Structures are given as C-alpha cells and as structure tokens.
Length: 274
Image (cartoon, rainbow, N blue to C red; front, side, top):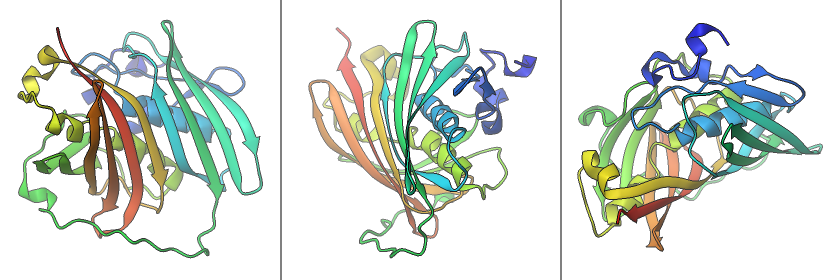
C-alpha cells in the first residue's frame, strides 16, 4: 500500500474515500486500511462499510444494497490491514446475495451478509412514520470523536436518543452505492447510546471504559431511500431491552427534509468490570 495508507495512520489523517479504496488481492478478495482510533480497536462502522464495498465490487452496477446484517466476532487492530473475502451466494434477476468475512492475523473479525436489489423505483412508495420534532443540528455542539464523523446529540433521555450525524470532509454523494457504505459507517456511531442511557450505573464518557467492558455484538440495516450522508441525518433511536449484559437498540434514520432513509438495529455488550 502507499505510505499514506499504511496501518496505524491516525483516523484524523484519513478520508472516507481512502477507507473505501480497497486493493484487490486475488479473486473476490480485497484489502483495506486500518487507521488508529482514539479508543484503540478498529471502529466497527469502518469494517462494515469496507465489507459492504468489497461485496459491491462483485455486484453489477444496477444493484444497490437494500439490507445487511453484520456480526462483530473480535476486535480489530490498527497494526495491520484488513482482508475481505467475498462469497457470491446468489445472482438473481432482482436480488443478489453476498457474504463477506473480514480477517486479520487473529482470525475473523467480522461476518457480513448483504442483499442487493435491482432498481424498482416505479413501485409504490409508502411510509407510515415521520421524523420526530427535535432541535436542529446547529443548536448544539459537536459530540463526535473527530475525523470523518460529525455528531450533534440533541436528546438523551429514558432510552431515547436523537442525534444528528454526517460524514465530514467529503464531497456530496450522488452515487447511492457509495452513499450506502457511508450511511452504514455513520450508523454505528449512534446505536450504543440508548442502552447505555438506561443502565442503572451512569458515568461520564471519560469513565466508561474504566467502568464497563463494552463492544458491539451485531448490527443490521435496511436501506429504504436515497440520501446524501455528507448532509445532516437524524438518528432517532430507542433502547429495546437491557438483559444479560446485552443492550438492544433500534432506530430510524431521516434526512434533514424528513425522508425516512434507513432503519437500524444493534446489540451491544455492556458489562460492569469486576
């Protein structure tokens, strides 16, 4: 890889375009960079986005992602690249299915299943949900960790979190396949908040790692309508349950005009340190 894409580069020095710039290493096998994040382990949203990009390399352009389900198997490291191995499960006339395993020397770190659909924009388009009434993003300060992500949290109460998110440092996105990768990347920045907000033990963010063992366990998305993730997206998420040290949240993503663009769910580990 070029020097600027070597493992361990601080995430603030990496663009989203570089994250998705995977190199082919044999049939249906791709390698991506592993930047260094403030908390040490790789960001799960990055590995999901890269795995989805690897799958897209094997899918004809008329197909776009409509759903994915990812299991986080073990934490990734920034000390080496990530290898993505794609399995072409099915090529249909309307739908295509792919499976992707992300690996490092420790073994598999993520398994992603994704489905892709040919355009059917002439079919009925109906949604019974609407964007909640909440404060605009410019009314609160940034709550992100730098780099490619901007977050503006406007509500955190009784298991409900409203958070504005967008991809920073990128040009507007019109290609919906790339936009789906970006939305998957961003969606993992919000979903751990609702279960944390209902835990009986509440600590400041700086004390979280000293108090809890935490990790994402799985992540699912359904992509509904086109959007540009470089513009503000509202994540309206809610805790569903907290049991056996596992917290489940579900949420809807809306663009700033109120269009429901995606639905997300995630289960996290949130275990008190002994």
